[in-house]
Image (cartoon, rainbow, N blue to C red; front, side, top):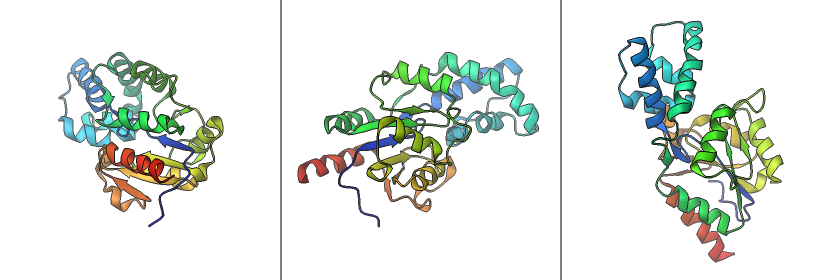
Length: 226
């Protein structure tokens, strides 16, 4: 097992399913769209499982039989509905606030790298109150490529002035682990997220954690031994 870094400069996080429990609002927007179109609303759990894959995966839960072109036509309306409700029920996962406070107290920078579109990411980060706290926020359309490509992760490090080799990347999807690993970072898969139906123990992450407090404890231990 790769040893946990001892001189951490920064921690980069995925957003939905890692920092924020946003599934209820993402599902709420889908429910509104189904009601508008007179389509049966799918159960919550299958939708929750795929929210890390974005709007098309969410819509596919309700519209399994339409082709990709038809599905793409539904995306703008879904995003508009989601924008209207995206902070109604979305909250940090239990323990995330304490984790971020611990990171900041130790002089470590943190940022966000998500595949969510920027117009949603930026607004949601502001509504949650993190706009002036995150050292970098990279969205799915900041660059021509998105995770699992490492380029967005490396851009976040560049903007925050971080050495990737001294950073953690934390996420609830295999794409997070691939992107963080390809960027040369220590990768942490989180069991508390949505997981896209996968087993984080099979993603070749450097570490798998069950809850945010597990990472808080590791960071505090580093401070004690420093």
